[in-house]
Length: 366
Ligand code: PLP
Image 1: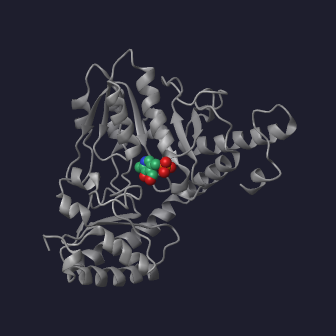
Image 2 (image 1 turned 90 degrees about the horizontal axis):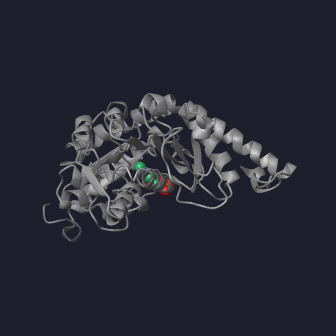
Image 3 (image 1 turned 90 degrees about the vertical axis):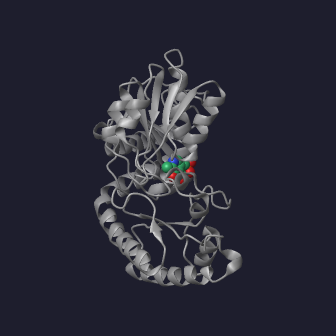
């Protein structure tokens, strides 16, 4: 990225040579992303992150097809970038169905087919859940959605661990976020299948083939594309490495922390995610205790931690608000080690036990 902040500072829309150097970098980055997604370069739109990609996909298709229908199907466990966008469209007169999930957090393919009406234009179902790591069977779900309209998947959490081949997945639109695969924050991708009806909401200079106006963030786009290519090429190795650490965490926590439970499907999940509930203990003091010991963890999603609201994902799995407040999300990366897992386990087991003995920090159910 560094040269594009300094000597290669051109604007890719400029005709002169300095601009054309930036254009070349942009084209190369687009090809790199297209190779990972197995799509055409012109089907790749660079955005300002996962939130923007989700917003653009949903609003872009819903408004492009508003003459055909006003019904959208999504799920109750999506990231707020999808949920809040759908709620906004509801306030504008759209109908939205929020599909339930089973107690393991999986969306059932036939639930999508059953929810379709002759007014349905878009189905949006996430590939992998950001809180509990559960992976949905997108190739099985997508054909049902496409029978009615277009199919979008939020694949933000899947990148670097799961196959992003849009043809195999059978999706019309797919969202990615750069910082989930060691790329820069504030960068994203929206795949839009060629010919898919789409109205842009960023209007102006017509960049990104009229789908996202605004001068392109060349350093960010270059960084995102190389990070995606690297993460994708190391996908199997990272998955194996994280799954081994994750399995040890799950086995040990369930064995050593009494009453603990793993949230989400035991096997149909990302290799780097473990989400637990510890009934009788609030999530917040667990996070603070872990942080003081040098362990960076979260409860619920990072965007909503800091509030004491129970996670909407755990509520959708049928958990009580009390149990949902006591959740802990641990995520791993390719650089985590066995020693770090040993350390985490010792700290966590001791911490939960100590918190259970502090009446002021425990909930009524303890
Ligand atoms: N979708 C999912 C599943 C996410 O996990 C996130 C971020 O955590 C987003 C969307 C939003 O991405 P960004 O933070 O790049 O806007």
